[in-house]
Length: 360
Image (cartoon, rainbow, N blue to C red; front, side, top):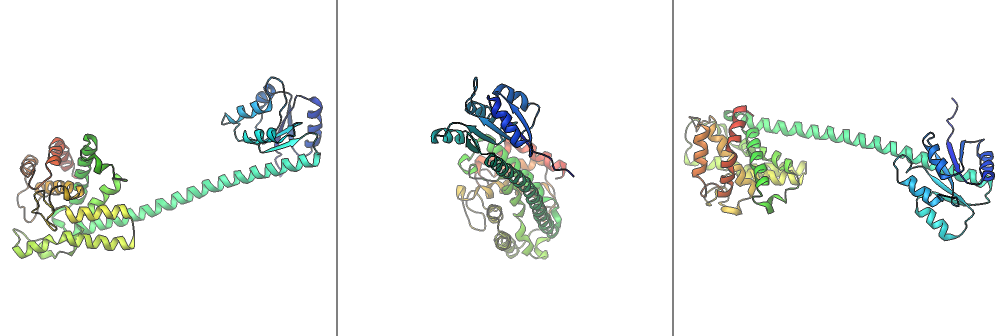
């Protein structure tokens, strides 16, 4: 197959120079000539040049003005430009290179030197284009690999969620519903500006929301006799049940060792360890009070209690209605729950009802 010849455009207002250049280059390239900048730009509408040889001293528009115009348009910005000029001072050469020329050759030039310079710059352009293609392919492969890894991570994450819910069979869908409840509260926080200083530190909101689904992972370590017991727990059983918060933090720390993702596991530990703390300091496991409770724990406390009360649980034989649960949570304002978050919850509680009815 015949090799495709490169296209060279030579611009010079001197017809002798154009004739000489065409004679030298035509054996190796498809050579096009233009006696002025105006003719060049008309020619560029028809010919996609691989390299451009440009005189500086021309009437109407000199070479410096031409290259500025070339660089201003996407279609011509990347055409390599070699200045061919009688100017041989350093300042002229520096100006030409500063404007984006790839080379600067003074007249009269050696035909062999001109051919070699063009050959070198066309080779460089070919290598640059090859590198661009390689980089795009590399980006595609990296993206595909990343998508594969993320898919595996999501699959493993969903498996963990299913495992938690399998152990807590009495309340299927709790983790995914609380994720949606939490998302409603967080979006309302962002819209209202509540706890703005805190929310501005959330680098990846979705990562934080996803990590909330591990808040009950500690229940994996609670025995079925306690976890699935119908009716009220004894004092000792309740003390053991309370440990699911601490167990959860310990399990997440183990997961963190094998698959470090600082942000995800940092948030997951806060949800797991503090969602049973109370605003008045009587919660567990640490007895934290008011704003010393991480915002993740204060938010999850609302979402978790809402879902627990509207669901059928062994210890909650009668599912309460949405309105009853909203009133119950409202009654806990300032004691069990952050009062400002309760005001926010009351504002968006109808959206909780929608999630519940949709069965997320």
